[in-house]
Image 1 (spheres, rainbow, N blue to C red):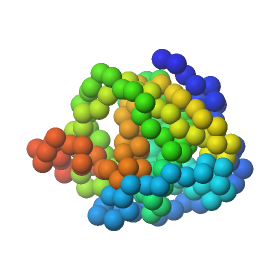
Image 2 (cartoon, rainbow, N blue to C red; image 1 turned 30 degrees about the vertical axis):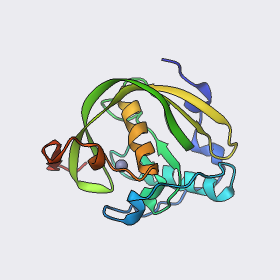
Image 3 (cartoon, rainbow, N blue to C red; image 1 turned 180 degrees about the vertical axis):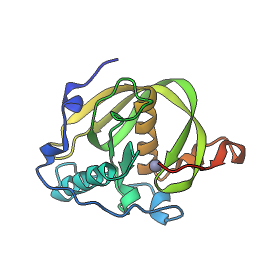
Amino acid sequence: MTTNPRVRDWTEAELDVPGEVREVVRAPAPVLSTVGGSVDATDPAVVQLAADLVATMRVSPGCVGLAAPQVGVGAKVFCVDVSEHPKTREHHGTFVLCNAEVVSGSRNEKAREGCMSVPDFTGDVKRPSRIVVRGQLPGTGEEVELEAEAFEARALQHEIDHCDGLLFLDRAAGAHAVYARKTYL
Ligand SMILES: [Zn+2]
C-alpha cells in the first residue's frame, strides 16, 4: 500500500481554528439525500466546517468518519479516523478531504456498516476493499491521492457516499441485508 505522508501526518491542528461540536442529523433529513456541492478548500468557512467535523467525530464514541451533510451542510467535505477501531489494519490517522472521489477500486468485499445518521439499523454492503481516492486538504487546498484498504477503504467510501447524497441503506442489497441494531456503542 502507498501511504501518502501528507495525509498520514495531517492533524486538525493544521486548520488553526477550534472545532465546534455540531448536532448530527438523522434520516430522513433531506440534506442526507442531496448531492453535496463542490467547495473551495481554502475558504475559511470550509476550514471551520472541517474543524467542526473532526470535533464532532471525536466526541462520538465509535465514530470513524463524519460527512458535512450529517451536520446539515450539503457540501463535499468529510473526515475519517479509523486508527482506534479494532477492525483497522493500515490507516492514515485523522484527515479531512474536500471534493474527494474514488479513482479506482478492486476486490469487492461484503461487510456490515452502521451510521450515526441511521442509528437504528446496520446493513451489509459490498464495496471494493482496495481503493485510490483523490481529494484536497482543507486550508491549503493541496491535491492529494491516497491508497486505502480494508476498513479504512470502507470508511472512505461510506463518507464519499454521504457527500453524494447516499446512505449505506442505498447500497445494501435489499431489506434482507438490513438489520435492527441491538447494541449501541
Ligand atoms: Zn454515515
